[in-house]
Amino acid sequence: MSNKQECGCGRSPTGFCIGWHDLSESEYKDKLTKYENRKKSKK
Image (cartoon, rainbow, N blue to C red; front, side, top):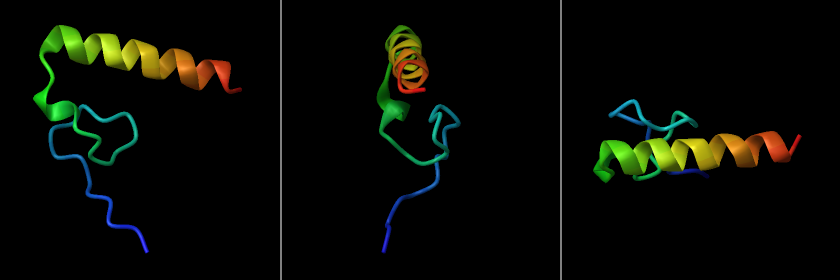
């Protein structure tokens, strides 16, 4: 059973809360870039 909560702030690329709501704008952009690069490298 999964207890994942949907993202309420709209920042999560997965659609579920991953704690990015507390990040500053620059931290968010950095994390998003790293997430997208990891996702591309897994293909």
